[in-house]
Image (cartoon, rainbow, N blue to C red; front, top):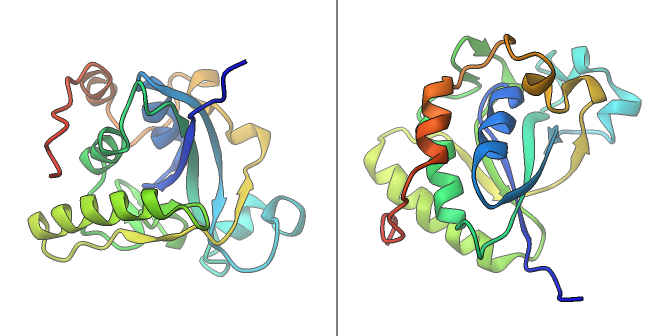
Length: 183
């Protein structure tokens, strides 16, 4: 059996329902998981409720763990999709969602220098385009899966709230991404 070349990135961009739904639509994304990243304390599912995460006291961000196959989609493409559906100049909010849990962020696993370099390159490009660029860009400190209720939420509730328009998801799903966009 061949080894997998699958890679992982962690993305925060407001409500994790919409970001997960977008990422699942992209060809080459193999798995998504909603959760809480880079907060204080330990597992919020066992020591804090979703309500506590939303209290602006834990520092956890609503985040989606995205696993992808780089033979079918590049990290640049994934980051482009995220940055197209958020306002990268906002702090602690996206769309109608306000609070520290909605801070946009891009996080990579410990020791993943290749991903770190790619993320920093893309974010430097975007920061030059958007004065006041406010997306957190740093290594992952911790990640805990969200409650089952939040997993695949928009698949279970197609009419549920989503700050990412369905038409935008479709455009990004079928995008012929220019690999030189961030070079």
